[in-house]
Picture (spheres, one colour):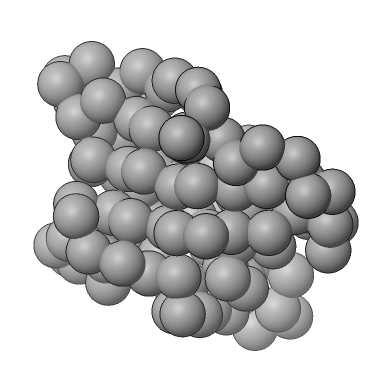
Length: 118
């Protein structure tokens, strides 16, 4: 992170994720990401350090950042701060109709965890 705030940007109802530098001057992960991504020709910022598209077989039951649902949003972000903390994150996903998995990020440590959702 090199002393910078970075974010896990989630776009397209969870179909696209990217790890990128958090924009300056915008407070709150909920509003810290634009639906316009680095792939847009007009984008002038740095490229993300990680970018992936998920297949349509992955379905989200929930996407929550700081206890607010973003399942129906065009974009959201989970921020990771230089002091090791992060925004609170929880998502329930399934893949090819398998048992739902709960993916969380602990806000005090910034560590991710995955376990059965039920």
